[in-house]
Length: 317
Image 1 (cartoon, helix red, strand yellow):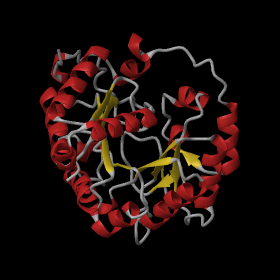
Image 2 (tube, rainbow, N blue to C red):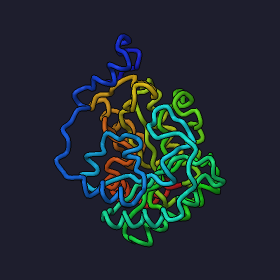
Image 3 (cartoon, helix red, strand yellow):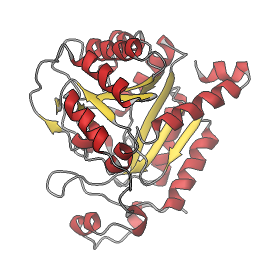
């Protein structure tokens, strides 16, 4: 049964909570060789959120020739207090990045690509045009590859969202990240309601594009707030949701982990999400937005295709 944050021990320091991971957050290193993935990414010169955000799934994913590419550089114009990506003045977008990206996707033989980016509030279109060119380049080089985009909120400007939608990604992902009460603390330059509006805009502009969002737990939210966030996402037209454990990237610079949820609690949260009507749900301690993204996307397509036309249309509008 889900417990509120207040029910946990208040005597344990953030340092102890981070360093003493519960048993279910410890797992052996994958046996596969990720050297080919590492070499191809290094040669491309394109950043990955796997490295920049210190993802705990890097070894597993790279061993299975999977990676989440991060375009528009590795310096973000926003400072979110849960994120390990560097905040600094970004460099100008690299004109050849779309082609380099398409080349490495082809070289790795990927069937589904997750493409994210740093926030680029310094650019007039916040990077939407460059993002769209990257999607187009991948489709032109590898026509059978499906593309999942995970951009910043573009300040919920419909013209920027439309620019990216017009490039034809198969899935549009925008993370809500946390519950509304915690958002100002950990995402000071973002806005909970604005993130919901992004998802609404996508469904209005391109109802055929599958929509997705991600939620972290372990930041001090209550069970009621988790449920409300899931309900808000569903009401905004979100079809796929991922729910994972927040892990503090560093002791010195990031908000502490307030709580570790058990695998059973993640199962419970996932069941609640499904009961709200999400087409596909991934809920677990190691789940991240792009974790097993190809399988999550394929599941959502199957379920949408298996729905009666009236219900599928309702889900997409």
